[in-house]
Length: 155
Image 1: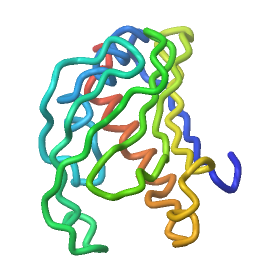
Image 2: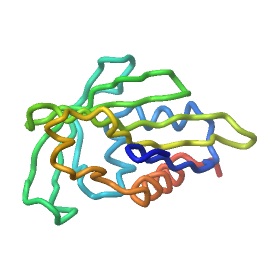
Image 3: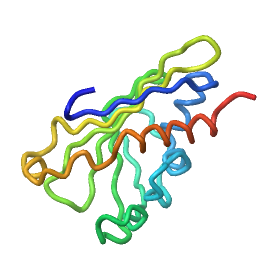
């Protein structure tokens, strides 16, 4: 972890393919979100770098900024089936921020070691000057991993 990157890791009792299927599906993102901001999604499961889908957001769940409901596009930047997936966000804000969210998956005995990361080291200078990053904290990533584990775990 660096000053501009957060990483959290958790063992999950499921095969990497099962975990990856949730992470590449727009509706999977909504299902595992711990923030309460992701309300719904539109689009098909992604299959390659450059694929995208839309997430319908409601920032009011955080109570920090009165943005109301808005949409963002999730744009895939890393796509390695059953190993890693990452994306950036394109929304109404210009210039685009440039922060990256992602997951690395490592097969281990009886499951998968899943690392969730959030990286804002390459954000646009205009956003960096606002000194508002990180916009999420490690506990949010840990909570989402807990929901992911509950969603995919083997019995």
